[in-house]
Image 1 (cartoon, helix red, strand yellow):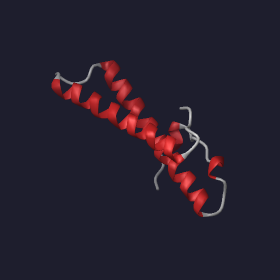
Image 2 (cartoon, one colour):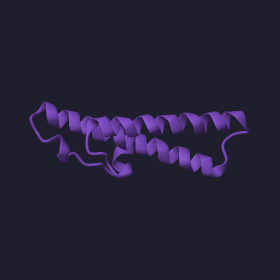
Image 3 (cartoon, one colour):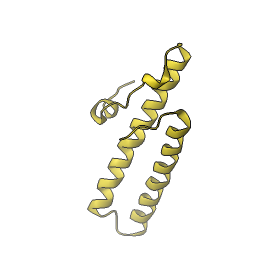
Length: 85
């Protein structure tokens, strides 16, 4: 995932991914279920959404504590997906 450089860009990416996720879910519910490639894409979208939300939370926390939000980094899917907050 290439990270947008600001909160507005991250939110724009999130909105686009949510739209794509909804479209994939609608197509799969209209048919007999999602095709294998749609399931793969849906999983990829879900992971990328989790990464975007995590990045946005990191940026906001850094900003709140006087750190540079630009120093926030996209974390690997395994780290974001297995987070037990």
